[in-house]
Amino acid sequence: MRITPSILSADFANLQRDIERIPSSDALHIDVMDNHFVPNLTLGLPVVEAIRAITQHMLDIHLMIADPDRWAPAYAEAGAESVSFHVEAAHAPIRLARELRALGARASLGLKPATPIEPYLDILGEFDQILIMTVEPGFGGQRFLDAMLPKIRRTREAIAARGTDIWIQVDGGVSESTIDQCIEAGADTFVAGSAVFGAEEPDAMVQALRAHGDKFGRCAH
Ligand code: DX5
Ligand code: ZN
Image (cartoon, rainbow, N blue to C red):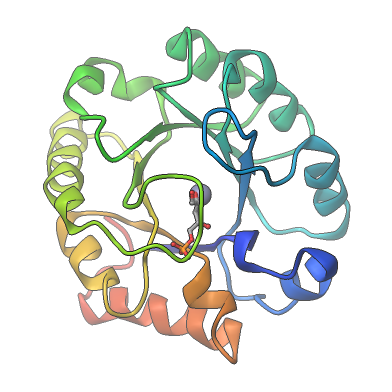
């Protein structure tokens, strides 16, 4: 299992310092918001490029933006290893996923809470990861929506039936008190923003979250 802290809850005036506080993380989850797809504005390509220059961490970009078809490839070109875009915003998700992969990035499909996985089961193979939002996208620190657990479970079953290795990432309200349900439902990649950066020792929290997976006796699905 992978723990991917969201730097949305880091100190934006001290991003490098905060990134250096989580050496145990498997990737940095970077939330890009455009104030159109979601009612919040965060950061964009120049900041991602600046982060790329100061860290070897895998960069896991989460685009919460309109028209990802136009903007997403540049993040892959900037050296991000994974790029998530939302299916609700994409005009041609298959074409975009193939473009991202051709640029060497993992292609990841994001689903808002009210978006079911079923319409996309036939195109799962176009993706390396499915990002299941467990809060409405836009802000950190919201409460985990346990109504998403059946969707995680059905997505895991569909991936297992295909016999392919597609990661299931959960994002929103993940903490020590909610991660077990997500693991049990079949998620293997966990975003945590406020839980990690709100902790006194962020890296110890990354390790504590990962230890929940060990408890279940699985490293990955
Ligand atoms: C919300 C973002 C999340 C956010 C999670 O739209 O996509 O990545 O940072 O924050 P927590 O873990 O605090 O819910
Ligand atoms: Zn996110």
